Length: 211
Image (tube, rainbow, N blue to C red; front, side):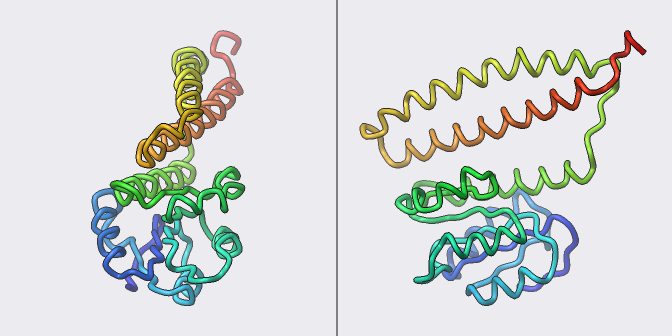
């Protein structure tokens, strides 16, 4: 697929053409038309990676064939963040990359394509917001910082703590439930980091009462 597009482009790397079309259908609800490209082989993926600036590249496990998955992902990370769709047992293999923050792991259980599409939407929106920049009125910035710190961050810490406590008993849970809880933890950690950065940004602005 070779469509003309600008910023916000998404590259899908999937050897399974049927799976790629299903994922494309899921993505059409959350990305602009004409912004999604498909590569059906690793060679094709690397060629298309050179063509433009990608917001995110979604790759399925089958594209790696028998090559080292971590090595392939590190090459892709030189161009774009990644959403990896793979069997649950491959999560441990790439845990270090996930912890670094530019790889999202989606286990192939349950309605995994919908989850992957949501993560694509989050990545593309984050890039757009980063490019546009965030501006806050100075008269409310310090009030907003306090709200972020106390009214959002504190409950979020409780959500994280409880989710991690439940995950401590994951041997009693189904694979689908484990995946959902890990998604909650992952998204909560990102939200907490976003709040930390926004709070720091807001507090750095001049206080209106001292101006």
